[in-house]
Length: 555
Image (cartoon, rainbow, N blue to C red; front, side, top):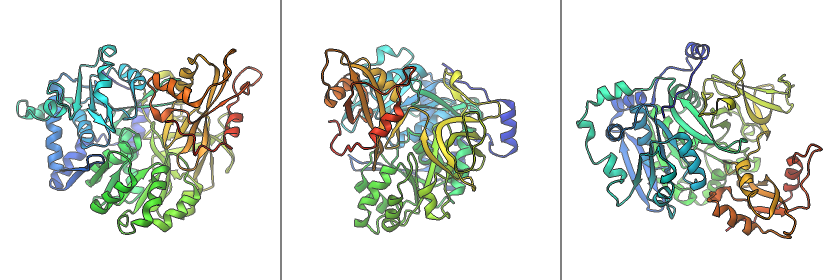
């Protein structure tokens, strides 16, 4: 399947005129970095469990990318076809994306936490031609999981496995050991396959209210129009060192850990599994100046920071997003680390949209989610679409250069109006200076540790449980993760009880990832409903505010 998307001539003309779009692609920035600083470090990749460090200069990275691109083309990957990967933050992921862009393929990163239930849909929906996975990561056998799905994925021609002993599908053997770049005219190949600025280069799945993941499509123009003003607002340059432990299969890690360092001509330091003590040692060795992560990462780092006053001294900027930052956490951060805490809000569909400024009063990071980046706009409106007064809660709309260009195979969900405004599904307030504060969500999504939990999809699974007659999933407030998932259920006649462990076991049998499991269960005689029969989740959310989940984590 060749993935394409159409950008209106009016939008393109406006974005080009404003210099928001420049038709540059990531390999253009890679070429510039190779030309000016070939021997400087591009990637430093850490594997926590193996205590392994791998470093690549820009010249070495470019050589690897050229070979991988030529090898992917030899496997039959055509321009516009999807190459998926389910990888942690390893150097191979950065190289694979660059190789895909070299030959015009669409890159589709998948979260390592996904299991059969999620992959079955995503790989089929994308009609992925190639899938790259680790043999094992954090004790899980990815190759075996994919083997169990192959019969259901006729479009999947090749599965390549990092660290595999099977030479026929070993990533190293297939994509790196043979000098394919010397067997073909790569200049001609790459020129012929070069994607235009408006061509789709990224497919990233996000969870929403539709009951199934949505495939967000981005072009080079939409992605870079976010990265450039983001870096400018934070005053980042080539001397900065980017530390990224947030998954690069998330837009946060992808934009600011994979792409941005190449634009800056700086080094990216990658950590594949979150371990705050390990992160401290990485910081001591590599002296990073910038990182971005969800609030739990910041909380964990601050917790141990007093033990390591010198190790974290290089960190200048910590951007926290995914959930509002508790004020007490910002205060503790000020005493524990030197970094300025910056608050941000965004979506897979846009990247970061609003962000505080490093020079703002620290209170801004506590009380707001920032002001719009250049080339982006936000509005807060009522149900009729009229702007609400300053300080009043309303529906948050966004438009601008980094707005995505569509959902794969779901044009009906691309709810952008004639003026370019996109409804985010979030509720917000805006002050006189344009700073917003996210106050809630109209979308039926729970955010656990910065990860969107697909509520509707899990509810649909739970409705298959023989004891459950009705179910509603809501978020329970949590100081560390932002929210945990709580299940309220009613039971079929004849079923008198149901335990959390029984629910967890049922969902694991359905091959749901552990990160999406409920952590609290409450059986009710009836769920609160409207006269028309709709479940009143706002009442359950209020009820959930009083729940303490300290000892309620599923095994």
